[in-house]
Length: 184
Image (tube, one colour):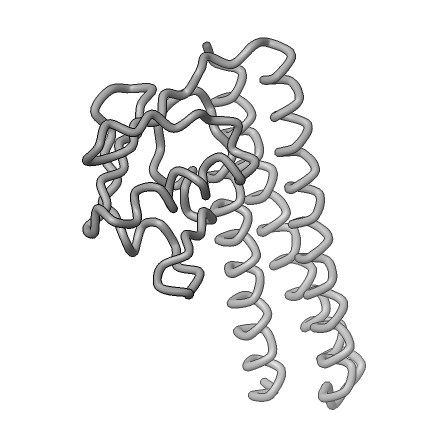
């Protein structure tokens, strides 16, 4: 057994897991008609001159299935949160009640659902490309450290097995998100 090649395999698997985690985070930002605080993960607010994630300056709750309620820890930034929501591409209209902001998620039309599924498939394909790039890097590293031809062949098969495993995981996550989007 080649210890260096084993370490390469472990590193490759770790990188592939990170690719899947990144994909799942991207999927969380795509709204499904149900309220999910992850929708606001990328929303940044100007807080004392620093772009700060809204979840660090406010609590986010789900009072109803299709609503989010943002209650800032410091009420003075309420207008800034409202501006950030309007400037974002969330397509939501904030309703400021003086102590917090209520966001009501409109029901998705069938056309919008189909468009969101296309977006999910695009993200999925990008994740597959990332996994394949990791495979390519791994193959190059294995070829550089393998002592014998048989050893190299065995490790390259291991890299391909890992790749197949994580491509299937991308497909699984894509199906879960697509089904979620198409469910009314």
